[in-house]
Length: 561
Image (cartoon, helix red, strand yellow):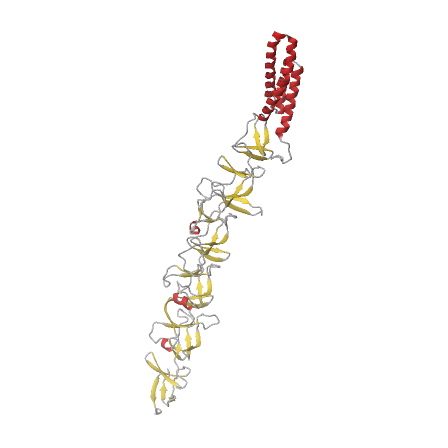
């Protein structure tokens, strides 16, 4: 058997001390047998001082033995008076033999009772104080280690110890555990999802870390075995908390734990507070209708361990928005169900969930653009620095102008727009001649996509195909009306909403009505000025003045007279 403190192979202290005490008693009996009782008294008095220094509890035993022999001597004196001293002396000495045996028997029992310090009984260690009493419900120190003696006086091993509202743990040797983690069986689970085991951390004083009475969660900084410093929280009984917890340090369980929880502490075998850290966590959200949602969200935990919630945040150069309960937005999002009124924002698919800023291409959202969503075609969008997608507006981006519809989709192609101070009030894509506006219509014609950059506003001259026909357009190059098709006479040609009015090739010449006047133009759209008997494909003759206004039209040449 190993001593719980020295860890050395030991003969039980009780046996060793008893041997010494028995030797003392036997020696004392021998003195009584060969000497007088008065001499024995002097021996007892001297041993009293000696025994105190050696911490032997032998004096009471010797005194008891002496009293026993005094009683025998008194009885013998009475008989000596009647029968004679010589006979009685012999009888007295004869009686000393059984008295000695009785004293030894009583002494052995008394010595066992009067043992002190650590004693091993039936394989269990006990501790006896200087009075020989069993120490119970108390700590005893030996060297640098502490040992717990339970209510029965037995040294505790491999168990949790509660003492004065504090919790300790003693290992298989009974030694108090200090500055260590211990995984123990969970004897009192409070929830169905609780682990079968719980973790405790015992500090330098052996006390288990536990919650304070402040009513708020309190984190303890602990250096792990791998050298990493992490923060942990514990309940009022010292059990390490894990999963979602609220401000009060109460574990949050159930389907809505991700909503009511403020901190996340990992699984039952983790417990570390998340800080400056992303976590992908399970979440049951019956209000989520996006098909992309797969019962989990991304969450971000700030330096203080609290989840980011109801806020925009830039992390590693990317922007994110965190909903009321801390889940990062993903895919399309609009501030209202009415996309024509709401300002939509787009967040990358749930795998990333970052907020799109600048240009991005994706399929329209179901809630923000139902029709575009049904089409399933990817479209270009542009989001401001705050994540708001530009919509219903002509916007200058990196030196180019772009137009966006009410859903934020970039317009690409030929459009007639009603514009007020760069805001697009209405728009219609021109896909056939029937869509072309007429003089007097409030819409103006723009073309987006005529540059190397898709969707960039076209300025100047360009040739477009409309319903299989080629048309020449001219768009303003500057000013508030930049990008609008010219409407009027420009560079010797007449433009109507940007389209150059010209004769077909099989016509050669064509009359054009503009601003109350009739002009003559050729197949290039050039106004025919100062013409005398110009003939079209139908052999019709025309004469024009210096402005190109028709002064004569007929099947016969106009006479020079």
